[in-house]
Image 1 (tube, one colour):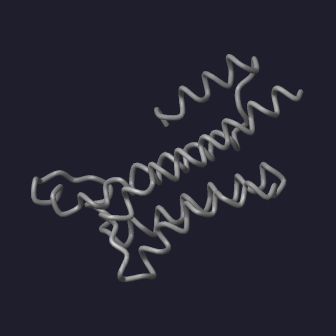
Image 2 (cartoon, one colour; image 1 turned 180 degrees about the vertical axis):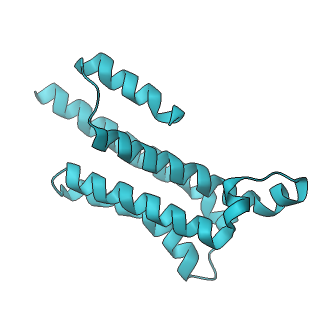
Length: 138
């Protein structure tokens, strides 16, 4: 929850009100999935070091399933909150990541993990640009 606090504060400063619970829930689902997903490549090292992370506790498959669930929830909220705007369908790329890792044996989490910063930057940048343009147009 800590990681979405700057966004909540910025929203409040810009609008004078708090974001809807739906937006906060979407933010929570995304950060929960990101944190869990980022721990999956380190499961063996963490286990050997005696560190019990959520990913170590759940294991690789269950962690990926939970990431799929969280990112699917994010996608559902994003689609609903945007009225199914055509650009909002890009959010389906997030649940596609753990789904691909669960379905395709040739995919390796250690490799796929490094593509997520690009996905976050592209989709986050697009979201920021669209919101700024909407505010500018009025």
